Image (cartoon, rainbow, N blue to C red; front, side, top):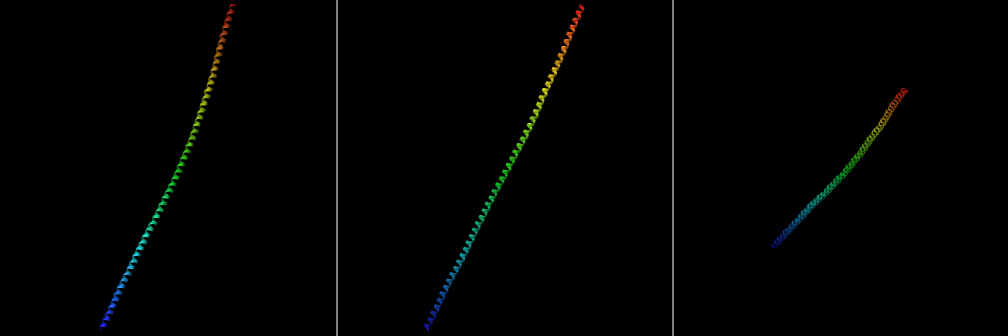
Amino acid sequence: LLLRTSKKLRNRQERKSQWMMARKSRSQQERRSQSKRLSKKTRSKKSKKSRSQQERISQSKRLSRKTKAKKSRSQQERRSQSKRLSRKTKSKKSRSQQERRSQSKRLSRKTKAKKSKKRSQQERRSQSKRLWRKTKAKKSKKSRSQQERRSQSKRLRKMRSKKSKQRNQQLGRRSQMF
């Protein structure tokens, strides 16, 4: 009986020990599994976080590239616009200067033509005056010459008349003497 009781107790103790061991093993297994799950979750979270950070970095890089490209295009466009405006301004300025030069030349030609016309008119007037003075001088000379001839003719007539009268008087005196 004692042996049986002792055997039972040993068996019970053995089963209890085995059960405790199994429980302990299960508990450890459970903890390991939990730890693994937690580790997996942590790794997943970290991986997710890392992917999220990577995505943000990539997005930031893409945005930076887009911004740079946009800025570069904008600057290029401004430079091109500035060049076009500069060319237009230069062309307009050149045309304006050319027009002023042409206008100045036309005005110069007109002024020269006016001066030439004025000189020509002045020359004709001077020539006309010289001709008039020459004609007047000729007429005056001719008139003086005619006047001189008339005076001379009158003097001659007077002298002849006087001489004739003197002769007649002398002849009359002679005839009285005889």
